[in-house]
Length: 129
Image (spheres, rainbow, N blue to C red):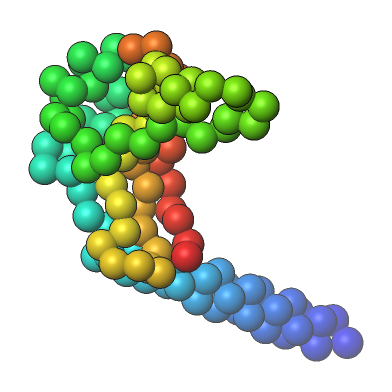
């Protein structure tokens, strides 16, 4: 009876190992796929992007990473009566250093939230579409 339990424990451990291995392969594969379908700004590098921290000035971001692919206004404008408060001129916007290379693909997001000339938020992650 004890040998049968040991055998079942070994089988269960092997099954868990195989499942973890398969999950790892899927996650790595999806990241590789996402990287292939991500368009980056010309001056972007992962090493330089990691140097940016909350509080970094926009001028320092430009020095490190160059121009972003796009600049988008902050769109949380519910209840705002003046549309200009939701524009880039409001001082609150996003610098996009990556984007999908085609519609409906996964990609690696590299976005910075700028609020009044300094980095207020950093988005660095996998976007599944």
